[in-house]
Amino acid sequence: MALDVQKTTGGREYKVKNLSQADFGHLEIESVEMEMPGLMACRAEFNPFQPFKGARITSSLPMTIQTIVLIETLIALGAEVRCISSTQDHAATAIARDNASIFAWKGETLQEYWWCTERALDWGPGSGPDLIVGDGGDTTFLIHEGVKVEEIYAKTGKFPDLSSTDNTEFHFHIVLSMIRAGLEADPIRYHKTKERLVGVSVKTADATERLYQMPANGTLLFLAISVNHSVTKRGFINLYGCRYAALDGIKRAANITILGKKAVVCEYDDASKGCATAQSALKLAGANVVVYTDDSNHALRALLGGFEVTKILDDVVPEADIFVTNIKRDNIDVVKHVTKMKNNAVIYNIMDPILDPRSNTGYPDLMPSWSCASHVVAMLELWSLRRTGISTRTRFMICLSILKGRFLISTFPSFRRRAWLRLVTLRRVIRSRGY
Image (cartoon, rainbow, N blue to C red; front, side):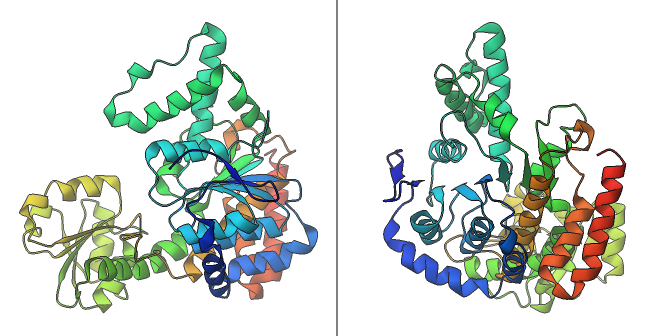
């Protein structure tokens, strides 16, 4: 696809596959709103105050119908939004026509994806976003790399050495090439972006792990909130969401009967527990579930949960029909044993519930509502902290308790008074400690 920016009649920029799908997209958006009470409660609670008026928000969440409801919520609360990363074209076109600037289409190449990322960060000459609502942290990565390259260029006058990256770092090579191409036109573009940016919310475990290490060495350039650590992610989606997603994804993508199959679930932590507890989808569907782990605590929890446990994958590989993994190390362990698996064995990575994007959007609509409501709450908290001058040492994990309290307010109205009092108390404690 040609990489050129298009504009609506009102002058709003976009790049999507086909605007003719917009009406279909809006029909789906309207149909899922009733199953997303967290976001609807955020609109009802905060819309009269327009808390994001004047805020520029860049979103790097996958543009499904459910995340479009999040984008429309941010816009309803006063924000301007630019988006990337599409998994459903009709969702992207719906919002491109009517609400926000979006640069996304299904089937993007890596070059196209990073071009879209750069467009989403471009708010005009010398301008960037105030907030980033993110998933895997790619926009955050681009800004940090851009600042590094600009600092080296300012000191030495040298462009980044593209030969220093190999084929295994192909995406990094693309990022460096993109940054290098813009140095002569604006050698401090990413510095200006960094200075304006208040903060970012992230959801995936990988992004959280990367950002978690940065405050310790002083390299995190702005505030960050981990939605991955919120009660909605660990206590709700990781448990209940994975039950639905694993069963639905495996059935749709592989078109198999789970009844009577032997399923190996790697680990027994918060994520994999969603598929391995007694009430889980796989066991309820009639599978014989075996937990593979070398962690003594996980093994004990699985045994107490009534499951067979193995520490040696070779013992179960030949007769297993389904393998469920949830971290990179597990993926590597399982892939090493592919040649020993029976024909048509299914490998499912629970960290990305969309096993087959053509037929499965991952979770039922209610569950994205939980994580999306957490993103709204994180954005509200970051925006409220923009003038407080929080120190580097507290830039990453500061608002987790507040995130929990405000989520309860937005999703469960019966908790509103109790959670609001808790929120006020937490804020006073945080400010009293000099954060």
